[in-house]
Length: 474
Image (cartoon, rainbow, N blue to C red; front, side, top):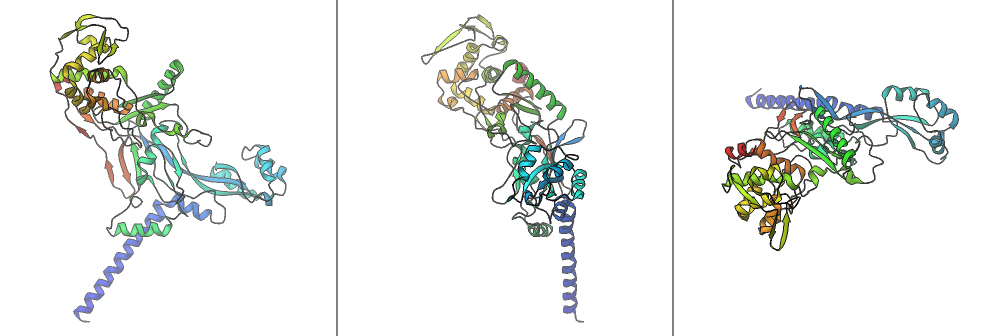
């Protein structure tokens, strides 16, 4: 054998070894990583599945003690259905079935009477033991088939933040529609078995990744760990319900964020929903997160930011005073304190202590439109926060650019401009964290199925306020 032949033999051997290695990786992915969905598909091949069988990454809550609990996971069990054309004794079969499951007799008999209908669903999400027991009965016209579904063990806990799934019309795949389910769909997503993204496409995607090719969102799936602490989240939701019971608001919400890192420890709004049971929800706007997707005139909680800007720009000092006249007339419009009462010459501190509109307006006018607008923009009030939730609303702050006296005066106490609650929380965090603008986020870690981990740390800019200003305002 000459040198060229030896070289060809070695090359062929290496090629065979490489192909074997790649196939092993692809088979590992199918047999281990996609085991749940594949097993269900194999078991269901002689039955009539109600929907495509799928797999999906898990969303975790992360307790401060380091334990992780599932906020969204995939569960498997059985669907109970009938073929009315094959039912022999509807009443008798109903009596047998109700020894295992609870069924409405009227509904069961109505479905059984559809003599020309080959398929009627009776119950979803049977546990494996019950499903197998019913299958063993071999009742004429009564069948079970494996099914997989998205489960939310916490029920309505952080429902707006976790989100829900929906079926994609084109591919029949289950994809994220709201919340983190949508924002991180590219990581959580697995192609539904039986859809256009079939098993062979998964094999070749695995081959491409193993060979070092570019991977799409389905070739590097994983789980996500949220920043939400379930105990704190539960407490916040309890407080929100108590607030609703007392004040009967159309929308009630709250956000607890670490101002130093931007991690959302808890976030919730009312009215809410249970993502395990969405079939009877008629108004889909209930799924939207008003703390991110809506903007509001925030009112007097804007005043600490106005005070910060005034101190930082040097137009007033902590020991300055001003003459509170109770009302001002600006550009032909009259604005007043909440009670219309004048306080006379008082310290600056009283602007915050008594929440005085005239005081906040006085600070804004002293700064001037350009300086005032500059500070509010540096607090992030004119831009989205880029939180990792979908459909974040853009603030309405064009009055800052108009710059008339009445526009900046009303903006100084939170009227005439509208921002999202999460945008307001980010802005106030500047005072709490020493002067920095942070990016709010709900995911702290991505655990890919290939074993790699991405840690999501703080993302902040600044400082946008001097340290002395922050201490004086605090």
